[in-house]
Amino acid sequence: MKLFISVAITLLVGGTAGYFTSEGVNGWYAVANKPSFNPPNWVFAPVWTLLYILMGVALWLVWKKETNKAVKQTAIILFSLQLLLNFAWSFIFFYMHQPGWAFIEIMGMWIMIMLTIVWFGKISPAAAWLMVPYIWWVSFAAVLNFYIWKLN
Image (tube, rainbow, N blue to C red; front, side, top):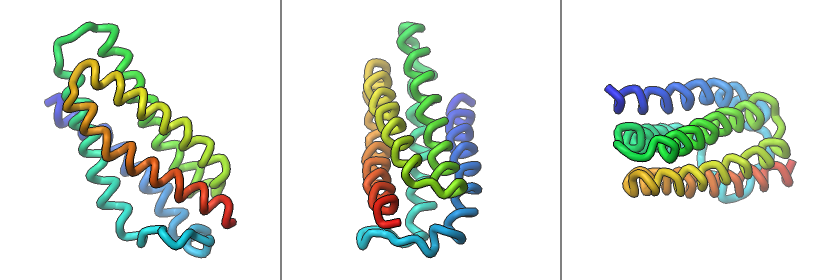
């Protein structure tokens, strides 16, 4: 049951963020200047879906582990904060059309993901590794965000 809840939480946040993303993708983003390495739009939904599932499994591995309560609580709080920032980025970038503010926000998100990876690693190395594709993708997204901001 904890696995289902963990994955459902991340997919729910991702799906809600996807709503704000879809609002912007067909609007200002469609006509915004983008760098040459910007992937086609169809790439984003499957990549994000897979990342949200991996995040959910990572959360589950931490949640189910019998370990120091304070360490586990800190890890889950960090995870929750990075997930909140993940949601906020979609809102700021796609719904509010603010790539500059979104870039600042994604830098904070990147830091929170790294902290989550470190704390998850104290509890479950597998959970930490499941977060690695996410930090790679967010790093790439940050670069895209930066270039879109500068080009527009």
